[in-house]
Amino acid sequence: MTPTIRGAAWTFGANVTTDDILPGKYLERCNDEVGQFAMAGIDPTFAARVRPGDIVVAGANFGMGSGRESAPLALKLAGVAAIVAPSYSRIFYRNAINLGLPAVMVDRIDGVLERDEIVISLDERAVINVRTGARFALQNLTGIAREILDAGGIVAFTRARLGQVAVVPETSP
Image (cartoon, rainbow, N blue to C red; front, side, top):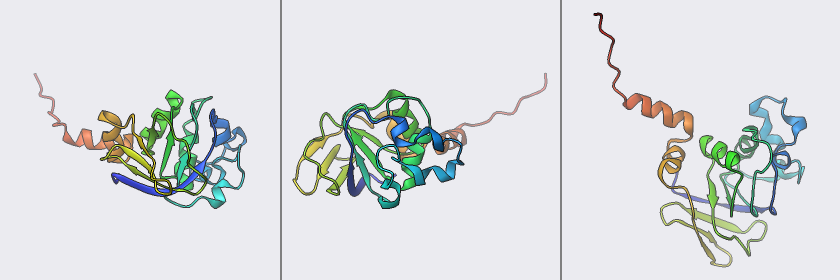
């Protein structure tokens, strides 16, 4: 993962549910199809308008509700490069990180307008609104979460870790 993410903001309020992100009627779709329905519970046109590298900026408690892994997957497949919010449902947060989708936490994210250019600098530990110059300090993405993101998700992270483990063949008694 690149340490700097730059994209246009798509703003949403607080308490966005996984059913808002990917409505239940699309859960029977193949995983590679769910991106076209991202945010359909709030904005049915979102997936057609979002561009690769864009950033979802939302209020507190993003991803609340069911723990469906397909919700963050839909955002990622739609082209969303990261999500910025003050807090997340715990299971949504873990699912996003495991899929390699940065779920950035900041203490507040006010003043961001739709389509503002946002820069997330993981190394500087900041989210910057280019239009206003406002900076918001990152509250997360350290330790193992950062390692998983840097690897590209939990599958790549696990494969890399397994590749680093020396396998000792069993010996017969």
